[in-house]
Image (tube, rainbow, N blue to C red):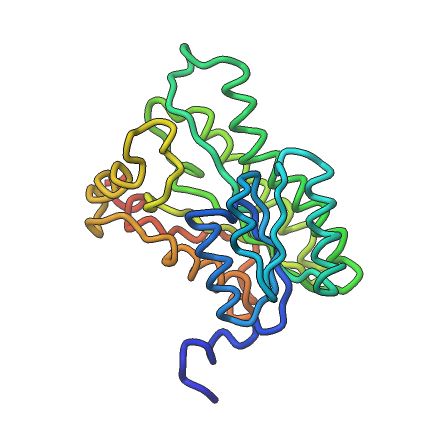
Length: 255
């Protein structure tokens, strides 16, 4: 047996995946890692920059995850282009920083629509495609906010709490059909998710991450590695788990 990293994840070779929020950050890193592992990917994002990922193993899809037709189209594209669907990564996410008193209903709905409803819609369509084949894996990209909160992230924390419970409930519904559902609870990761809030979103996240026990923020590929593990048969005994990859933040918070 090969002892190389690629050999350890050989079970992903030939798989077909959908990755949402694929234009940048964790989503893009996941697409790139999947391609390295021999996966065919539908890369979905509302940002047209996702089209730059197009290639023999990547079919880009410009779509809004909050719309039912987007989920249906993503699954259809996976089947039409690559023949099947084995993995769904619900990665698309947004955040606002407002107190509850200052938040509008549109603010609240916009965050929940992407982070929770988008994951529900794509999970529903993916499960419908996976049930007849009796196999599949869904990986949701959560956060330490699945369990913790601090001021100004009420909408984000509520959406990630919902995502954690969607993960657990759906996992119980489909494990008897050979479909595993798990999530990664990511910590501060150097991405552009805060660019609409801070002049230097990645810089802010890097600085904020320095306060974790590990002393730094994650790079997107580090979270992608956990996603790849959860998507693989190496995680065959994980059902409804929220795997914390947050540099120790969730551990330290209880001390």
